[in-house]
Image 1 (cartoon, one colour):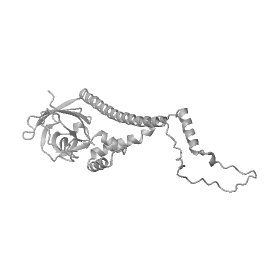
Image 2 (image 1 turned 180 degrees about the vertical axis):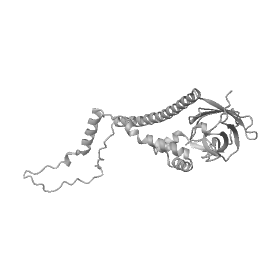
Image 3 (image 1 turned 180 degrees about the horizontal axis):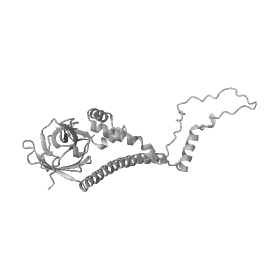
Image 4 (image 1 turned 135 degrees about the vertical axis):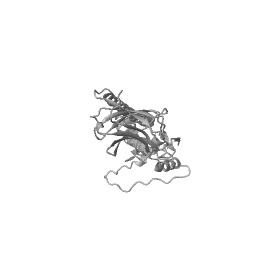
Length: 293
């Protein structure tokens, strides 16, 4: 069993590798490995979610392989072996009825002697084709499991690509809208003096594009949250992270038309965001008057 390091601040600093999760889902780990894996799964939500995916895959394996007719020769061998196992082994086992058709007594075999030991019951050999068929079934299971895993990975990639394409389309729709304007945000002197941001919007719409640069990465377990301020009330415009250069771009979804808000700001919040600002302010900008130049 292999455990890889992946610390995210919310789950154990290590996760079970994919091979171990697959083996656990198929109940093919030995007792010690299974016990260790179970102990890890009790405390790791990441691995629990991954295990559920593999258990769903393993549950569908029987449906992935198409039914296969056994070879005629194999069926004949199995039937012949079955009949041979039921057939008597000696003529003495066949007791003939008397001429009058009445059986006088049951046949009792002679006891063994020193020079005549009991003959062992005949064994029915498992045809090599049966073993080959079993090996083929195991191989098919492995291939099906790998194919299913690949299909899940591909589906996730396609979903991510679809989401990215939709985000790009929405971004371009805002940037090229006839009524688009932008507002500048400046970094807070204490929180992020080098940060600069721009807020692209159509005042009558509720979707905007926010672009920032020079914003330091937040501490582990923290994330940035954008706020839309109106009459002293703050509504969340979304969460975002920055790259190693302090850059970010994301779509802002507002509850109301963007032109109804007065100010926008960015604060440093706990991972998952907050209902209202609780962290240090990083950027601030006014939505009125327009600042296009």
